Image 1 (cartoon, rainbow, N blue to C red):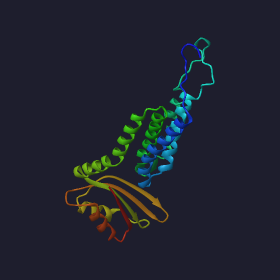
Image 2: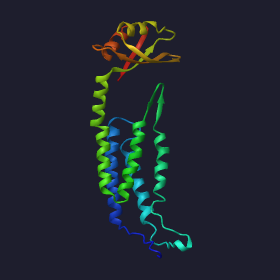
Image 3: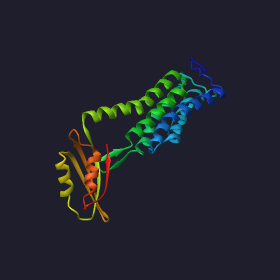
Image 4: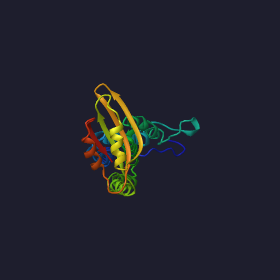
Amino acid sequence: MSNGNVIPHLDLWEVALRLAVAAALTGAVGLERELRERAAGLRTHMLVGVGSALFTIVSAYAWGDFVFDRTQGTAFDPTRIAAQIVTGIGFLGAGVIIRQGLSIRGVTTAAGLWVAAAIGMAVGAGYWGAALIGTGVVLVGLGPLRMAEGWVVRRRREGGTLEIDLRPEEPLAPVLGVLEGRRARVSRIHLEEEETGRELRIEVRMPPGVSGRDLVEELTRLDEVTGVRWDE
């Protein structure tokens, strides 16, 4: 080496340790997604974490047999390969985002894959503190913070989405009449026509004292309705 381009060395046991820690930390994030039955779960997050850690290790430690000399235009850059993880993980995250009617699902899981890559990179670089703290923050955000968020949202507004299955060519008036009678505020309506019937999605906000269960029970008594689901 010349001009101070000294590539650090990493023993095999250190490589194995970093990959194992990356698998454990990102697997913990993936397990939370697995328990919630999301598209990307334990194995996907673990593979992203291990892959990111391995890319980082290769980028920083795998070039000891090469000669780098700035005077000849061959400079050693330990971040060159690892930097591509940031953009490459976006394609994988986009694959778990699904649009269903009015709603978009999978954004949180895609963000989980993105942060799993960051955790894997931190472990691969030997930045243990950042990886551990990052994993802890993510698990708190996906667990206790999610429950706190749900509690705050429910306190501010009692609302959600009604998914109603209607018989073919049945009118919407009876359904809207139930909502009006309960003084529910409709913010959005989406109707899909199918051969077997009509699928209606309504985003509503209820006044105090009225719950989603009340609406479901009343709507199921309508002859036009074959099924009702409530999603907060």
